[in-house]
Figure (cartoon, rainbow, N blue to C red):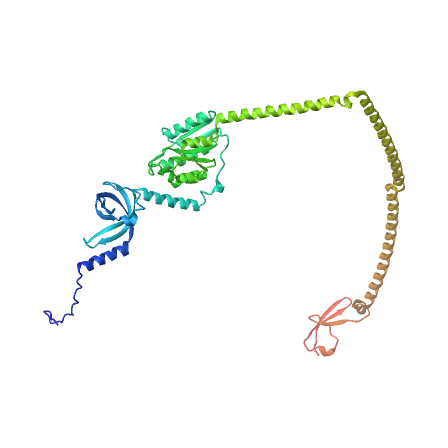
Length: 456
């Protein structure tokens, strides 16, 4: 135990762990391999060396740092698609580790490609998957190109070789076709927006009657063609009401615009050949059809001529007067039969009309109405008489009841010298027991009422 200056005992200190160089290097290697592992790195090749064994050693660097790399022949000979050289800009995929003999970290290379292509390819595949999932590439939504277009719209650079090639092919194959060019940049910043705007603009040219739109550009690197891999271009093509042909780059080049378009042409010249029919071939085909039509007309005329000759030699033309007389006689007989039938039908109609008129006279509505009116008047008179008689009986009975009521009513009783005594509240007194001293009484007489107070 140690004691500080103030006499306070200090706790025991742990002894620090001391690593060997090998142990520390292996620990660092384990951390790098487990925590980082396989990565993509882009940079410039320097200090390039290739050994007789086929292994390649180089340094990958940028402006601020550098990384040692080794590409073993046994690990990627089949995948080596890029011949490395001093100063190349590459993208490298490999496993980060530590070369313990020198104590330096390095990248064990697995794959190398030209710089920039990998990221662009990844972006290409990601956008392709996204738009394909939305259905923009669905074959069921593809529009059919017109077989004989009169007006073709082209979105491209007005100074590029693609436009010249297409115009040359169209002039040779279909000189009657009109071309509407919508100028647009085909590479660089803002090119994708101009291409999309050009497709939309050609859709809006109703007065020009554009029937098909071509998005065109000549060949180039992946970076040069990248404007046609932008989402805004793909969506403009998919939203087009007109069929769209994508003619970008060479035959081996594929862009997102190719998948979104209704038809992909391997080159701009091929697009012109696919869209416009060959005028020379059309003329040849028309001449062939004309020859076939003439041949068919000659055959048909020969058949009709033979038919006419046969009819001319037939009995009908040998005996026309007899045939005409027979036809006239049959016509006369038919006319007579028709006349008889009409006459018989008219007579039957007259008989039916006469019978109907007789029945109508027997059931004339005015006579029936007069009879019904007489019955109604008689019933009305009988009802009136009965009503008057019943009314008189009811009046007599009412008068008799009124007289009985008068004789039996209280007024008649009072007239005979009687009176009615009531309490002040109108209760009729029927017994002396109901009267108490001081009670107010009302006595009704024939000619009025008398109010009094009971004393006893």
